[in-house]
Length: 218
Image 1 (cartoon, rainbow, N blue to C red):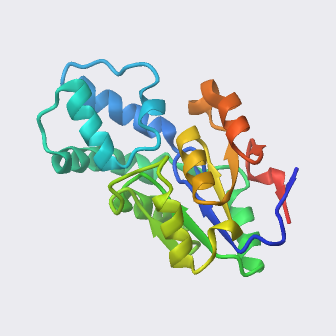
Image 2: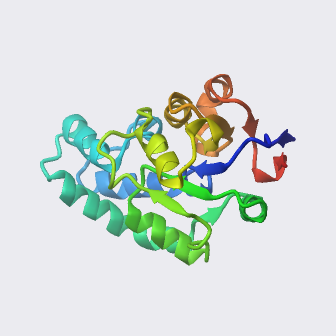
């Protein structure tokens, strides 16, 4: 059990693999998107692009796979492929709703700092009736440089009007943990099936690790 410090004044969540059990969706999207172009999905692709903004991921796909579409066209297609899956298959991690409710009961605002698109973030939250749980949402549409750059976390703190040192972040991938730590935040790693191969690295980089949100207390 990890006890949350009394000095924490805001909590910031990554979305995929952290707040939501959703990484399998992107494996499915990658298979369909690349498969339609006769390209096999490389092993560990999700780890290689895990912290990238959607725009950075599009540039990566152009370079690695020789795709000629513009980044905007690629992002539109990814959103279309993922939209239904996010509305029907994605669920919050165990204990996430209860932990967020505990934060709110203590007047601790919550935010999302995700490399995903705003469209999919908002669609997911509305589908799970969680759209009112977050005071700030910062998406991959709004940042050109993704994690491990700390900008997205620093900007979340600024919008929450809280010092980064008073923020607690949750992340499932090394790049995200590094981004939060560079921003000056405490960061707890969340276990996820998609990142089992880098679990030891996550534990080393973070300030603690949880299997799910039931392992937290105030």
